[in-house]
Length: 239
Image (cartoon, rainbow, N blue to C red; front, side, top):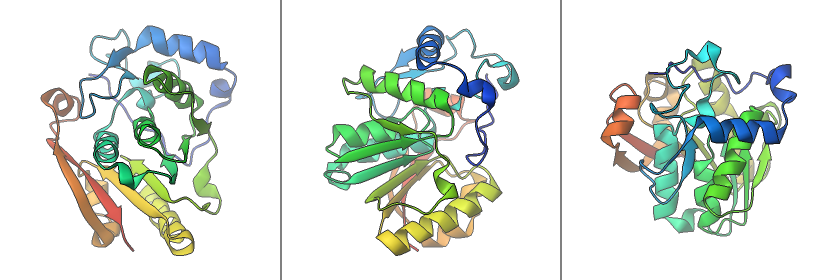
């Protein structure tokens, strides 16, 4: 199985990544991923890396565009997208930020359920190319995407921020905790977090300020790809 180590959000994308055109990135993604709907949100079709793909067994350091985290539908992201699809009022007529979007499923679900504006954000431009393709797969025009390190500046007036699988590093978790708390205090932003219960998440002080909104059992194929994790959940952050 492909060994993945997702890069810190605070790390700037490499100069090599920035030099690739959107067309070349999209061509590469189409050729080396599979269109998949076998996950918690079968309504969505996504370009993903699967065991049937040529590069699945490559070590992450040999992947042409660094760690392909954007090609994995992480359990926290699946929970968020499932929750949004099942609860359209959460996003309807609201400004939504999909922070650290990866494949962009949560942002796509928000757009499909009537969000007034969606911004998908990820520092990796390859994620942007994948997000654009995934929008097209789901009969949407490409949505707004930004590679800016949003955590480096003051938060905007978002009605809703969604983030999945981002509490994988203690330093990043601490930074997210402070930044999200500021957004809530200043703009009354609602924050939904998707996570399958990783140690860095369940052991972080943020746990004391979370309300579980939903929990989902993961399909067997997703369990196998995520070291046996059996469930994933959505949490509302209420500091």
